[in-house]
Image (cartoon, rainbow, N blue to C red; front, side, top):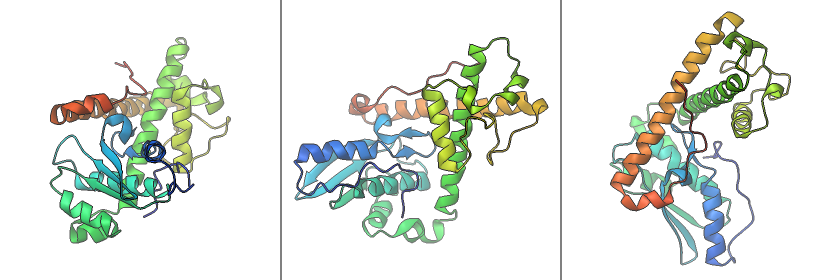
Length: 256
């Protein structure tokens, strides 16, 4: 399966590289893999349990906050991790630990069976459709973050005024760069003259709908942020040592 969710970390072979260099590049590659529901790198979340070079093979173990996390999310994450690590040019094994479907997922990954080949009739949803759904949610959340920050910087601008704000009007900061990255992933226009507030197809919404659209986007973003905070806490409860592996969140909004 092509790891469409990943930005390639590099394609140079590490076959003759020292183990330390291999593990550093492996961590960089895994940093391009995001939890599809939380839109955060699995390295920041602490989901990478270990990475070792054993007899010339890179062996990576992943973990999740609970044993009953959705199997499709779990498979998507593990499969994307394996795809990202293949760019290192050496044999790779990725294993998901302590999940109720670990055996099924690990067997499917080892056989490169794909999602439907791994779960058979239980795979009731196409993985690409699932990926697209969460990409669109991530774009909506990123858009709300950037526009809420814009409103804070322009307190005299009414929400309806966001109808006229373009991508070129937004500051060159992390929130804007994240928004542009999500737009590129979805194949949406990223020119400076393009409207900043759009729907999932890249179409601007009517001016009178802007406040409502912003509230809907904010609700989704708050839900994603809450889930991320909850999952981080659950992981630390389940694996106390994981706290050292978690990185501060890139965006921590305080929006009422």
